[in-house]
Image (cartoon, rainbow, N blue to C red):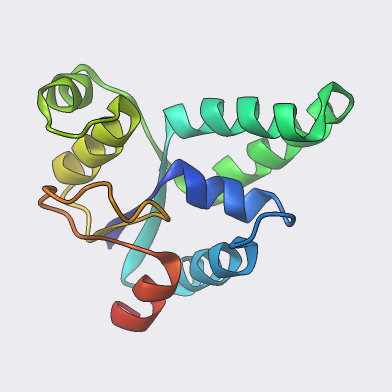
Length: 141
């Protein structure tokens, strides 16, 4: 199976029904989970980032719910570790944002089929193609 890296913004879209692209994220994840060709992969760092952002969005009183949803989510997808090789490649990349450099490095080192993201300006120089959830569904599945 080929890895498909889900950017943090796709994870957030999936986990929060109030986000504009929620349904697209749900569609792409459902298709990936049913696919025999692709394996959905998130970064361990994305779990931390999503936790922080969702807790800020929903408030401290919903922290337990955010934690529970992330814990369930991480069990249905593969989680890529943050290694020294990934960090070395991310710091050396031409991505203007370190988080994007980490996503790109993970995708390239794993030989991923694609990076699914809403950030159309990121990953332009990556050896791994990046696309939106909708584009992935149209082109790859």
